[in-house]
Length: 431
Image (cartoon, rainbow, N blue to C red; front, side):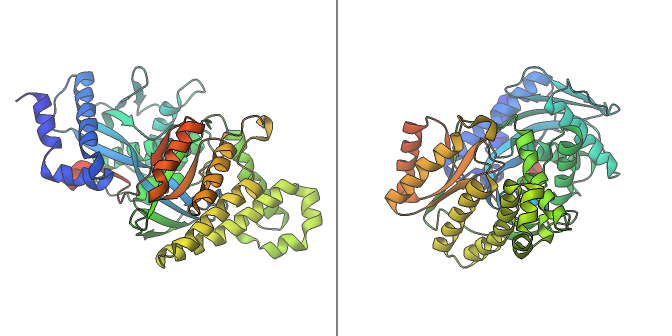
């Protein structure tokens, strides 16, 4: 039997089909089988080896449902792992080197485990690999070499957390190969955040990694970031009559580090002016009582961003309760309020320095008019903002019409999003 036939036989066994159906849905089963088969074939062709040690890994992207820019100030977030994911075929090696091929990128990424220094000229992928290795070692964990072929359908620079998805994939490979899979989702999330903060110089919170790692829909409370409180929720939007859709607005947030950093920094400024460290530790009444002084010391936008935090934090609790009660009208009102707050108070819908490019605002305006016309649904800015994607929750019967409208007006991609129950994991471990 040829290697290709062995691969096809392996991917089409009953257990694998059941696993893939659970991850991606019955309608994507054939496509996902072919996707994995092609990845395995590419791995074998590139590395020239056929080994029984080959393992398959997946780490989801994520959707943010509530809690826009709250995690970095110890706030609350409602998010979910989605069926768009980053996958890998990988084998452990005795050589202390990570070798990785990422589909769509030229050449190989190589990291010697004995070399931890990074230079500005190195790629983001190399920096993250080195950061993850360092993060494992900082925690006294084992690391080792491996070869991997990686491919993803998580839209890059969009707010679906392609970087966190990649980080959780690499963490899961090291966890499975060298730490007996003992690390939990919170553990690998912290390592991914460490790699971003220390090696890639991205001032990210822990939301993205946690949402990619856990699986399902999760309500997260970062009051104590070292021990986030996580509650997993069960809710089927499709069964409730709604399609969750993410619209690529055409912008790109790859070079927006300064804009992102301004959000937590301005919130910190308001908290510090009120004698606290984070916005989680202040109250709206304090802002009102000290408003003239705060406006002078921190500026109006900083105050609005702090007010957004306080109201958004409260809103997450109400969203969770609405889902528990299966109260979709209330949930949709809260989702709309979250979007309005991001647009008006948080002000991360477009860059002040480039007011000619307001791709997110255009997409939201088109969507809001459509929702008014059909009399239902909700939309909101998604993720870090300034560019990227928006989230729309559309009645099932109007989803096709909305898709056609986006394609006609914006000409950009639109994705039907499914919440999947598994975040970052090794497929073989479940078979």
